[in-house]
Image 1 (tube, protein in one colour):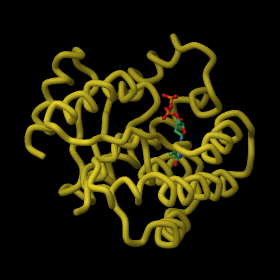
Image 2 (cartoon, helix red, strand yellow):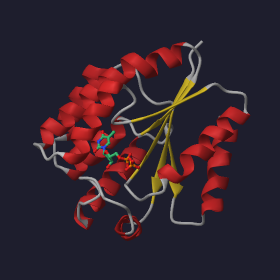
Image 3 (cartoon, helix red, strand yellow):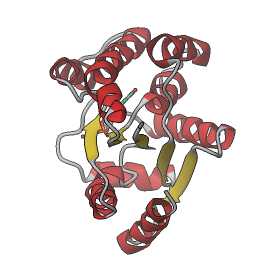
Length: 201
Ligand code: TYD
């Protein structure tokens, strides 16, 4: 009995965080046991690494390595045991974010992220990835109103454009795994789209 692994992705400001409680409630309403978690983070060590990753400047490859170090711990302590117990694991970000941010955004060659992915989770991929997509101007405008922005949220439009493109390319390359949601519409519309996806699980 293996549960299902669902990941949520998108640029900062795409609306992912707004909709996570709705997604979890809809899964629970189906009688599923849901484990909700996030990256970087999800474990005590991972949350310490998150603090460094979001606030301290570092070489782009150091950033990629620390993301995957946090991920290794997250899989060992949280994701793998939960899936083995039959739970639905909902993670706010996973490795697609490393392809989008560290490779697309920061320019680390994608092949290096692929190597880390093969090392850290060769036999684990999300069953479903929901990508919240909005035009870059929308994301940047939403972030402008945000409380104290972290290291990533302070980046410029060009950075977010590369991230959006990297995400969309990954969605196009794995259409069976990805569902792309237009995050630039009223909250109720986004919720409707999410409910359809969850009903089809
Ligand atoms: P985010 O998920 O947006 O949380 P919050 O809503 O609290 O701001 O923040 C995590 C940040 O980490 C986000 O800017 C993307 C970045 N990130 C990477 O750059 N690479 C990764 O592999 C992951 C998981 C996240």
